[in-house]
Every structure is written in structure tokens, then in C-alpha cells.
Image (cartoon, rainbow, N blue to C red):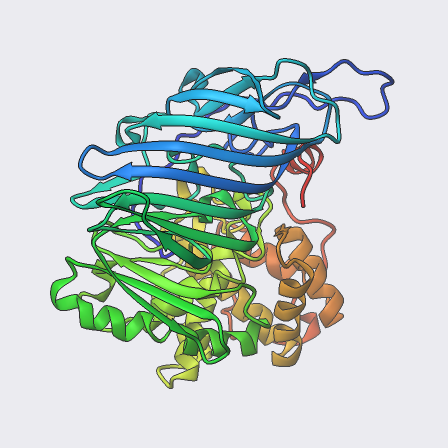
Length: 501
């Protein structure tokens, strides 16, 4: 995601329910945790189950902003469950578990928790089918005092980070629980309903309405699952390597339409270049959506969405490189916790350096040195730690720019061959899963055979401007080994509290 001033998610200083002690015989069924233990967002995600698939079947009327339908969740319990939470804020009409009605409480405490109590406890390891029926006006629903649902004159956008799904489908809303998706949305004939993956079909069952069917076959995080409804120009084609390539352009783009198309339609070319640096493109489709209803851009899986303002002055292929680099760093390899956001934004920003170098608009050396030189040591920029910026500064410029400088310093230290081997190894080993900064550092040391902890400590964890710039000393002795990186206190809690794919 490109930096922007945006609505932040309210931070709640609540603890996470303790997990059951392993090995206790005949433990009684217990409630699943109301969060996975993320230090930034205690209510994000849930404990007690793991989702494999979502089937989302909805009808949306833009004139009234009424969204209704069902979400069917296929999940496996990871403990003996007496009850569990789903992250969801809309009014719920019913919940069925394997066809049996369950009791529930909607938007418990205003935290966006749908608390579900099955008729009988669920045994650990059981495969369950959960069907949630609901109807509401998403723009009127507040979770932690905010809404991320974006009503537009001709539709709506379910697009945001770190959370957007609780305003349109129930789920386990944390990147550590990815799943596959079928998204089927019926809308009036004069608008389009867009989502991720492949457009598998369009159907009509009644006059004036069209149903759009989308399928995502690769593991996908909830916040990267998007819905865009509006009067879009839909363009369908195929990439040179045979993948579906679907783009859409808001009807209100005006003079920016040409610049938007001149940028987004180059996505396959840009992804082909990025694949030479990061490894094969990880998904089954490509595309992009440009909307006048957004002030920012976001890396929705297979189909990033771009705010129209980004093309106000002409084509912006650097932004396309940024958001599509996220398909590797952020989407295929998601953050294991939100404090590790550098693994998303630092890498996507560095992809802009690589693209600039590729098209002859400045080398990575030049861009990195310019960024380092133009920000004085007294600037508060240097006090933000990219490796743990805090929830209120999660999308601060330092996460992007100092994050990219970190990668360039790594590249200059280990050399190009080892640097790009590290990136490709990371995207291969972690494909479809999640990663932590400490894991990336360990891999970088393993591949390069160099001590690198001090380098990362200097660039990611130290609240001052590094004394040596990103193009500085490249010898092994430039950085010394230290024992550990500074970790958020709840690091071990997060590993223990959630079963990852």
C-alpha cells in the first residue's frame, strides 16, 4: 500500500485470553480466544479454529446501501470449543453450525466480534461448516468507533488495511489465517461487482440484476479480499503468459482515464520484470481497479485498487510496481503480525527503486542515497522504527523509505547475487504463508554467510539516523554480530496463540 493519511484502527489495550495448557488430560471445552495475540490489534483474528475456505454470496443495492446474504465458512477446530468468535460487525440473522442453529451476539462490545455458541461443544480437529446469514447497511456500522466501508455515489468499496472484511463478511480477520474464496455478488445491471482472482461467470436470475462470480484459488488474507461495486469500465484480456488479466476504471476518472490506463495496463510487463527479481508471479490472475472513491492504493490480491488521484498528472508506473511487488511481499508472504509491516512496505518501496533502474530513471544507488541525504538527522522521521513503528505509525513514511534503505544497505553488504537469492528464497519458502522479520534476518545470514543482525539493528530498530548511508561500507566487518534483535514483548505469545497454515 502506498503511504497516505488514513483512518487508523483504534488500538485497544486489552490482553488476549490464555491458551489451554498443552497436555492436560480431558480438558473441558473452552472459548476460543477473541484475538490471535497481535500486539497492535488485540481483537484481530480469533483462536480455536482455522479457516480453509469462504463462500460469500451476497446481494447489494447501491441506492439503499443494503448488503444481504450469507457467508459459508469451512473450518477445522484447533481445540475443544465451547464457543468462538468471528470478526464481523453487521447485523446477523442466523448462524448454523453443520446445519444446527447456534446462539450468537452481534458486534460484541463494539469490537466487531460475532460471538457464536454452538448447540453442543465442538471437538478439537473437527471439520465444521458455519453459515452466517445477515443484512445491514455497512456504512452505518462502527467497529472501534470507525468504518472502513466506503459508500460512493454509484456503489461502494470494501477496501482498507489492516481491516476491511468485518464490514462485509464474517471471518478470522488476521493474515495468519489465509483461505481460498468464492465471492458471488448480485448487483443492479448498471453497475459492476469486482473482487479477486478469476471472473468465472456472470448470471441473471431476475430482471434488472446481474450476479458476478469470482474465485481465488490461492491462500488469501481477509483484508486483501476486496469488493468494489460501481459504474466501472471492465477490460478483460490475457497476459503474455496466458493468465486472465482483468482491469476496471471508474466512470468518473475524467481527464485522468488515459493516464490510469497507461499505467495499469502495463501490469503484466511490470510483473514480468519483478519476477526476474523476486521469483515467479505467485497467483492465478492479474489486474487492477482504479476508483475515484479512494485517496490511497492497496495491494488486493491479484487485483490492486488505485486511487484516481495517483494519475492526476500522468502515468504512474512506479505505483504499479509498488502495489504489484506486494503480490510477493505482503500477499503471498503475509506478515505474521502487524508490527512486521516492514516486510510489506519496505520491499514494495524498494521495488520502485528496481523499476526506476530498469527504465533508466535513476539507479537504486542514486535513489537510496538521495533519500538518505535529503532527510536531516534531526527529523522525527528517524525516530520511527520500521521494524516496530507502533499501530499509530504503521504506515509512516519511515516504514516505506527507511525500510527501502535497509534493503539497499543489505544489497550493498552481501552483493547483488546473494541479495536477490535471499529475496527469491524468501518468496519460495514462505509462499502462501506468513513471515516475521527475525525469520528474514536468519535467512539473509544463512544465504550470505555474513553476520547481519547489527545491520538490521541499525536500520530497523535504532531511533537515530545511521551514521553510514545505504551505499556505505560493504565489507564483512562493517557490521558486527549481536545476540538478538529487539522484539515486541508479545512475540512468543503470538507464536503460541495461533495455528498457522
